[in-house]
Image (cartoon, rainbow, N blue to C red):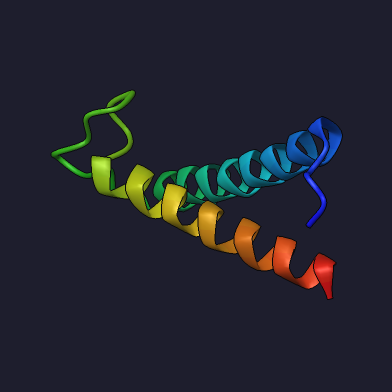
Length: 72
């Protein structure tokens, strides 16, 4: 099995960060337009820990499936 190169690992990491960034932007826009900011918002008084956990999980899943589809 071939070892992944540093360049391919960096691309994968950037893909995951991009997915997470898009998720955060969508959450911010939805909260601004709806006017519903949760009371238990901890991070920047805008995000809950669950929001960030869901975003991280979504980024991991989409990055994993992206990597699997590239290898086919």
